[in-house]
Image (cartoon, rainbow, N blue to C red):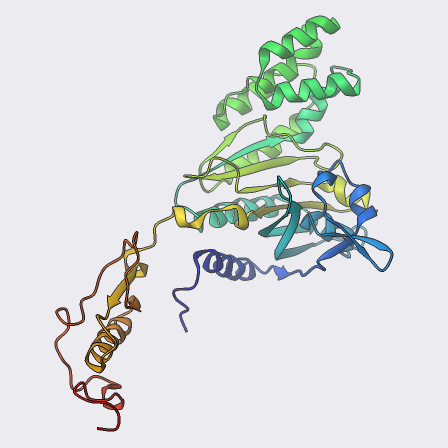
Length: 381
């Protein structure tokens, strides 16, 4: 049975859950709470200022503010597991809203935990594109690699403060301030050259890979090969952007963000996070992504013509008006249209208007008509 005319957000989530199950992924469900100490211990992975604490019988709990962190802690993966646990989730996270209150954000995504091989890369690339296409036909994915960033960063031999400044230059693609920092610290071109290359890397996949292969004094051949695989198996538009930086205590490989037309920020993000599993004592690889469904304004995307709402007004509460309007609306619905029967059409309505007295001829054979009172009188006449 085809389900039509549910909300766009719910429809997208239903399509995605069906898609992930088609790929053999199992749904993973989580509790709405975690111990507050759990988030405090992992504050570098998320901003603990956004965590909402709740005192429950003397125990400090927190509303879930991150899904992947909770899955990584709770999932059971045997050491040297030869296969992979493939999961999807449809959950809400809760974070403090600017100015007070609580933001409830709906997320849906996938996780692969166990062995992340080339087949997993192909599958993730396919699912990234299929996920974004459910939101908009126009999308693009930016990718980076934390392994390359970390190796280039280590060549600089910086203290934590200067390391932070260097990463901010990378995020902002700011070569000027980076060079000024290097000159102040007295670093040589041999030391800062690889990191500078990352800041000014072209977005074209082929050109970026060639530039990375030209870097001297930095063994990143394995990481560049991973980047090439991701670009090779990309289904939609994908470009290289090393301004995408994750926490290197957790992310160790490919990281990416997905964008759709009309929304100025990323609606999808993910990457390779073996180090997060390692933090919980699990010797496994992991990759995944989340679509931030709750942050997408689905009203930006026009409905298909056949899904647009039409209004069928009735002028008064007489039997003639009610019967005629309901008859016209029901016949339109039988033809697959969405129809609102209303006495008043509100300002701003941009759908079709059905005039039941003009657009439809009286139909004595219409299904259900016999159950309604005659127009001239009431049910007792």
